[in-house]
Length: 228
Image (cartoon, rainbow, N blue to C red; front, side, top):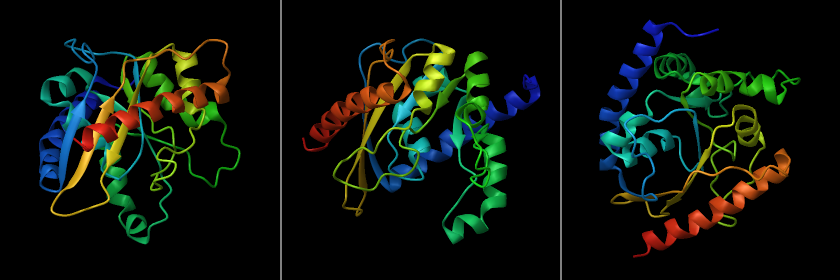
């Protein structure tokens, strides 16, 4: 079912406000970003999948801040796949507030984990609808915050490939390097890749592996940038 114009206006306005407040993260993070020439240079981007690695709960805000105002504005509204299942007691306690933020920000919630029969189409139906309506979507292929240093990028779930094949939307791979040292500010380097199409002969699992290899190469670029 298509969303009302009124709700979409709420989402757009909320994301603009979030971007402005997101600038406060610069107090805590030293944010740098690199991207290929021509990426996000149009006034408005449509039907695009952003596939970033996942380092912190603040990744979405940090990525949008890293883009800068003009490129962020070209992507809005950005629809993100969000979990309803929180293992942290604090996040469980804050869940009512988080649900309100999800609604304001236009996040698309995964079905709860207790639904053991969740199929891939069921999990991703909301994102697929958003893509078919021309929105930009964000999905973290690792499926969780990845804290290990070796390997620096977790295994990719096939969901992003499912979306790509069903909607025909190009994927923008994104790698994030984040410093271990937290003070005085944590360094956060974002390497955006050129949009890609998954080779048609690959199935979903093989496509996820192919995309992960691509992101690993981007991660090395981000790491080199951080070491300069």
